[in-house]
Image (cartoon, rainbow, N blue to C red; front, side):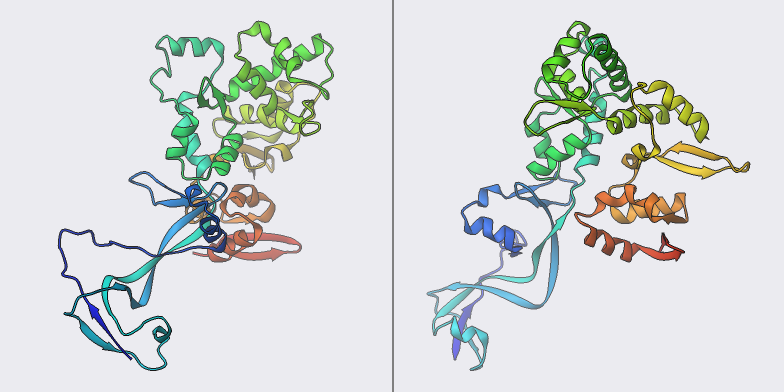
Length: 383
């Protein structure tokens, strides 16, 4: 069988790629088949590596080189073309007939989509930190031209245009960093103000004889009405330090884990280098409402424990948020801090690097060496 091909004249002013092929995962192809292609969005600023998102997932765009040239053909009526003979067993036999074709493009690669964990949390911290909410008094000064008055405020749509994540992942990341929507813009809450709010709120519960395991939003607004704190901030801070007893019921219980983590974070941030664990625990208990018992398990991903020369344990502030978002870079930095990490110690710092345990295990296999001492698993650098 013979077909004839016409190669168009090359125009040096045309873009290098008139066409690109993308290999779609089944779940993305199904969106297109179901007429939901408008849910696909390519995101990224000029300096970013582009990603494509659905409503709930983010995919990196990876260029894959092919060993053979792929020709994109279309029917042509031209008579000046080059004949090409196809073997009888050639796969193209079933699709082509004895007509003329023009070559629309010669491709040596295609784009593959790889599901990734977005760096939304890190991007949000970088974007929102300058406009952090520090309480009603400092907010008033900010609005009058004081500290923070030149900080950029970001709406949901503006964040969606910058942060490389799906809508659901962006919402989850905003929850993770504890951002509040205040007058149409998202703001972080200062740890210092949050702790002041906790002390004030718990004291108000005692004064008003409120049950801290059965609070409503209306309770919170009534108790905090005289403190000039915006209602949106009151409700947000209440949610930051409580759990809903039953989804949709509107009844909240103050959470020991959330409150102790907030107070512990504030104390850790004030430690310039390191302090003895006993001193830290004493200060932590002092600033935590007496109704709640502190425990180091509440501070996972925020601290390191070390033994000093006197065989006393010392603690220092070491938050995951300060580590690089890229897996290789983060692990390299972790192994600069410690040559060997126990599994229980390193997991809080790396769990967000992969969307599930299987992919996290593959990352660890690629970048670390595993060893065991008894039942304890340790990780060290592979490089």
